[in-house]
Length: 251
Ligand code: HPA
Image (spheres, rainbow, N blue to C red):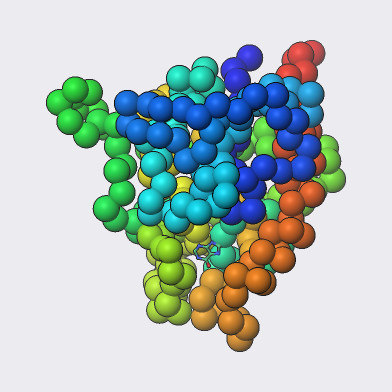
């Protein structure tokens, strides 16, 4: 059984149900992780937890050391990563409050250290990224949601924007034309780095606002934070069942 890693996003510097056993700062050859690596338990199962934006939630998406984070999880023996992500909804079915496991992404970011194969030390390598998310992890999340009685949308394309500002209405319209259903700021390069290090990776996205221009209401941090709070219990419960089901012997 592989060790499970959970990367917490906005609103999840910790989360309900995470029992903390140890917390250690980690230095990797790519630099320091966003936050100390937490060894803990969820649903009675061991997990490594990393707060992507830092323990105090001070790191904006373009300043996160994604390489250090993924390297630290690989070094800690993790082989599966569930990445939590607060996102905006673009598809009409992705209204605020929706939980979703996307199956594709489009990368609109720039200027981020986006590969481990960046210099001669690791050589040239082009990883297959046709399916950016682990189908096995996605299915396990969907089955945990069904068991927990939580509605989880299967599939969708995650547009990864640079941030930290939100998008213009025209940018969101372009993303919709590109086939995107959700918009967030952190899935890249995180997902690609996980693939380069051989870690299974899935995003558990929760919609906290309508994408820019899709609603008459202004997008405010207060409204986003209120929506995160409304999703937190379901996400904690879903992850607990997910961890339990992964540990259960296959009959
Ligand atoms: N755009 C980009 N990232 C986000 C959004 C959004 O509307 N909401 C939460 N994260």
